[in-house]
Length: 213
Image (cartoon, rainbow, N blue to C red; front, top):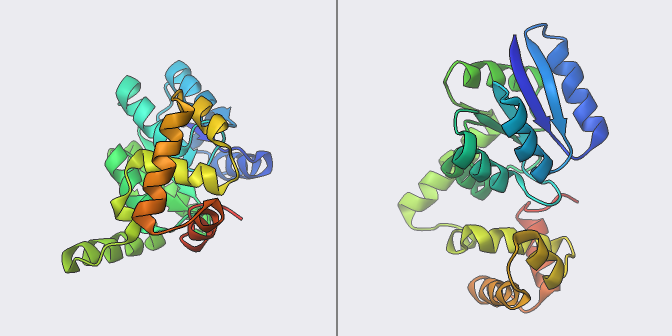
């Protein structure tokens, strides 16, 4: 029996995932988390065989969860489950240490297959994720990479939170940094992406599937 932890902030989605896994009779959901910080704590406490983590969660996103888990209990493989098919997310998730990437548009059996493969020590990318990754690799080779490639990991995180309407103070508290530092990130984002204000940031994020709407 493969022991799995699910981290997903939407209760109904989480319940659906639990049902899918339990129906296989090969997977047991031993813990659930509704935000990133809770996910990290429960992964440390329960040491699941595989953790399935949504990339977009309050408090701490999936990429941050990966980093925390890799740093403290790197033997727990993580599969990212998300609506986002943007190649930037896939590349950054894999670079951070994710062992699998499955979109929520994938069939349920793909998630089950991903869990089994990752549990056995392999890696798994859904068809959509693999295609996006291939496109990104081609763009890198041609020198036509996305503007998002110019942003650091933290700048991407701040951009997403700004796009979701969070204030500089709220972002600063989430990352334990100063408000001035957040504003510095914001100004860098505006300059690198040639944007004017937070409204432009929100439109950019929506256009590039960086936030759920």
